[in-house]
Length: 204
Length: 344
Image (cartoon, rainbow over all chains, first blue to last red):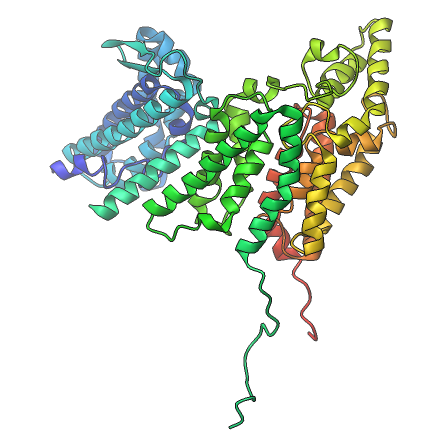
């Protein structure tokens, strides 16, 4: 059972291996804190929607399952959106449209379709938690790399629990490479991360 | 059996031309431009070029060492990338700019695709595009006045106003004034006066006492280097001819900010990076088409894009982006210009 959790972190990592949910990955990872914020939102939505979909999997007619899954997912995305706007308004502003867009994030519908609609509640919850964690880890590290090179700073924190704090780690003389926090920098960083993952798996 | 009776498949004609020989000859052909840049901008141009070359060569060596491949830095292609990348930087940039740009160009423009021969776009231009997007202030304001000339190449105090190159003055100062409906008559007169001055000083552009990126300053010295390669048969004449010809024609029609058919074509083709781009960067063997018809299409495409960016785009000069964009179309051009097989 524990395997359902750990597979999402490396072996079937949603970004590096399944290559799902790339739109928010590229768009929001301009700071490490944004990466964590997006990741936490996805963990919540993914775990909760996996649980509900697993519970109702036997009563849902297969012909209309997709609209029903989307409705369930949209419910949790609305919760996340309102909580985020209420408790962390600055994060909500930074992530902008990408929070409501979690509804159409391929990872969530993909796991609902491929896993939660076929497995038990506990397994589905662990799957959602693991996939969400794998997503968050990649987003955090991409955000870290892009922020350090692209802005010379590192913003750490955790939504609601710890307020974000910006460290000026590259010092004053550093002239930041603007490209890294622009879309091309996102693609380059993602490509390098995928390559490093393959390299690691090959050598392990 | 008669030992003279020898059957072999083609090729039957061999020559001693190798990649290495061509590459080092290209390096040689860039030397006049480098000497000119050193004369006009001082030793700063030379030492920026040297660290750009060192960065390109060392990056290539490190990547090849780490990936367990044969180290091919002696083929001279990384040296060319280093020189061309530095030729594309304003002479006043910080010393680390050519290092970062050349390393990025070699790593993400060339080695990541598998090294020489596999790259999709020109590594030097990719490095320039990276620097342009990352440090736009360095790339657009660090101009130096050359020996015996001024940055825009004319004898007014215009560089105090805009600090720009001839094309920058044309676009930002003259172009915007003429397009501004609320410009006063004096401003319009001054803009027109500057336009006339720009046109009449095209010889400055040709010989080099005008501001610009390190390598573009003297069109004459670049042409000397190009002619050497052309005589040795190492370079295609179709791409430069198509590129410069298209830019000349369309520039004459659309290029002037004050109406059609008014551009001084000599000013147009000798200003900015057109000579450097058309002669040395669009002709890069790896990233240009291999068929003669394809080369015409490639050159004409570069020319059209350059004129469009210069006249209507956001930047004063569009050579580097034109070539990068056309580089991406090369596989398509190659596929659709395959010559008919003889006898089929």
